Image (tube, rainbow, N blue to C red; front, side, top):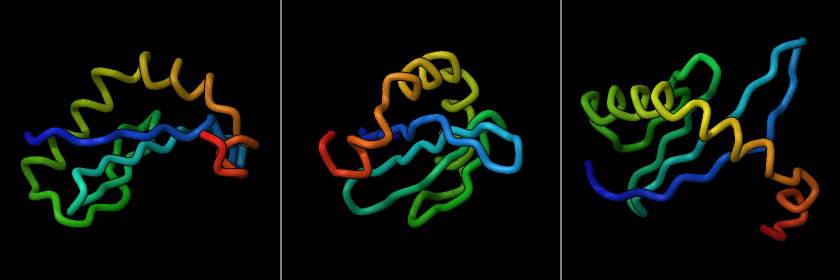
Length: 82
C-alpha cells in the first residue's frame, strides 16, 4: 500500500446513529470510509485489495480514529480553519 493522507470528520449523528467519516487520498485516488461499520462508502481508484486493506485499517485503528474525531471542531472544519 502506498502512503496516503487521511482526514477524519467530527462525530456526526443521523437518524439516532453516530458515525465518523474518514477520507483517504494519495493525490490521484481517494476513498471515504465510515465508522463504526468500517465500510468504504466511496472509492475512486483504489483496487479491491486496497479497499479491503482500508477496511481492515478502519477496524484495527477504530479507537484511535474515534479519539481523533472527538478532537475535531466542526465549526473550524466548516470555516476551513483546520
